[in-house]
Length: 235
Figure 1 (cartoon, rainbow, N blue to C red):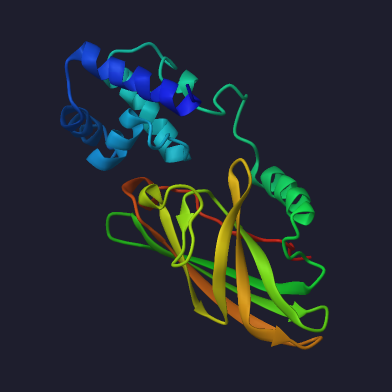
Figure 2 (figure 1 turned 45 degrees about the horizontal axis):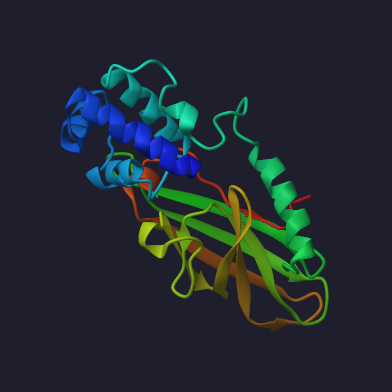
């Protein structure tokens, strides 16, 4: 039995014990200022998806209170909750780099990143509608053809997805300067997207790439934490 299934069972048992359904729970969460779709709650109850984002973990705490449960009686079953806190993103990226080198992911040896810009668009309700990432790279070797960008799990592309594409949380697509050449799992909490330039670069040649990430779920659209990181930091 997986960690996700144990959480799902505990969640389903709590609903049954209280004699309520997902619609009732969603309405009570809305009254407390937490907007969660029936689809997301259904995924959590069935075990198809587990709450993992910060905003979702906060919702789990509220669910425990709404259902009259002891604090942490549900969240204790979530993967990673046994740790004292979430692994810092910088630490995850460090692990991803080390694993990525072993797997032959394109690293900072081929390009230098000289500019990075991230723009988050939100609607009038504060929901994320799109996240745009623009980067400028300079080829450090002749024929540099691509670069790695680390992303969270649950990201799908037109050509590939990490995990079950039916439960993807975010869609990633290229706008200009590159194509997204698939996504692979690297370490827990981090996946890697390969941005392939429109053509190989000559030594010293620069290229600007633009990609956008569009939330596919309420959980992703209401997340307050968005970011993307390339293999190389800006110095």
